[in-house]
Image (cartoon, rainbow, N blue to C red; front, side, top):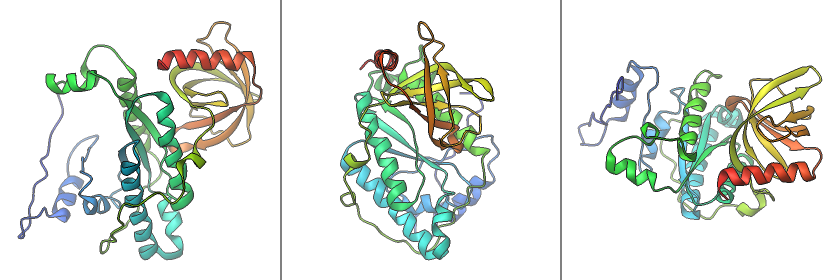
Length: 303
């Protein structure tokens, strides 16, 4: 691919192990608009070395409990390091973590809710904001792209996974221009073995599954109307993307432009994630219009 440079993980020290400080310094001096560092799950110390580099951090996990437990153990180690290094300011430092979670290997839209539930558990238990930025579904196109040695996004057609990768790229570029993300967690290692999650995921799951979509809509507010992007829909609400500075409690009406009749639905803002430009909306009223909306989203998701 044009304008793509691969830098092998080199720079071993006297002991034969990679010199993480040298690698970190090399990466700081790489010329490029975007530098992607792929670090395996077994190299936790390398991850912590990059925490003070202002990087955008993306964790990948599958939805099975061992994977989520290992991810939680890693994040708990980060929280303990923050407490050791920053004391009472640890939570404020962890708020600059600027990370996100990417779910991998979903078989159905309902399974994606496990990742959103895990994100809420991490925020509640550790104080680390880790929104789920997307979920990759199992697809025969993935092994086909590996055999063909061609990136999935370079193939013909846009399926849900391609749209997820494009959304992920948009998120990375948006997060790169956000507030400073320095989150120094250096110091001796703090080993946290994988263990059962502190509380059951079921307590953080939504009652209604969300279905991913990519729709346009119009948000009508007392101050005027603006175009928005709808990213997911459930019986209780919708997730949208917008540059508007909305606040929790704001009310309005969403007109779903791509659906027949452009049904208007009253909404209230439930949560706001500025780094992702994501806003969670709750439907103020439910009835035939919301049922039709969910049915259309379910059809798009193939559920």
